[in-house]
Length: 278
Image (cartoon, rainbow, N blue to C red; front, side, top):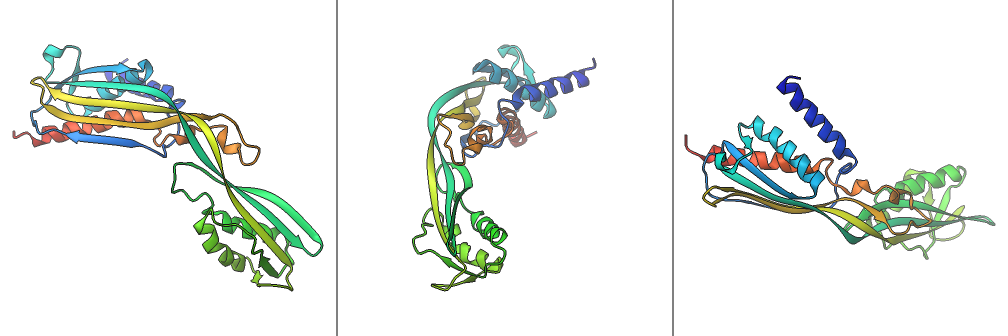
């Protein structure tokens, strides 16, 4: 096998092994990057990684590929290196929480009253509106279920407090669905909506990293410290709207965080070398 094809095979195999670990984009990431002021050209780098064996092995492989592309050789001996990269990458399980949006609807038409539930979004952290697309969906569903209804009353007992977007847009979507909104009788439909946010406990698997590159004299070139979710498991799956909790790999914000670390390191060292006067 030629060197070029060997490198390509290493890259593809590394990607394949990482897919199950880092499979979907992260919704929460915390990264701190610092660039030193020691602008000395780096052409040979010694890499010393500790921590999770699989992650460090793949980061090392990715670093070799990325650094070679920018003219920096990864060497096996400190004595041959211009600088040293020291890094620690670990996985840590911690308790977390997800918010699951649930819509409860009650629709009265004449003497008939029907109830059903629908699902909003699932998200971690605060500041996410779990019902930002639900108003249009509910209005379309009402029109589909009651094609001959014309006048509609939104029950004053409705609770839309869990979503500013739903509360602000629901009436507009009802009008777009050819309903006439009324404040009292007579009406064809009386709709009561209650928006609920369920709290679900999870065990979250995080990737934590701490990298720094220093010249042989100890001067800092580049450092990066951060964390991001890889995946998680829910301790219990709620009966309503629990479908999104069976596979939580979507919590990861990047498909290949380890590859992104190699890329950001290569970029920073390239920037360092660009500062060196020729």
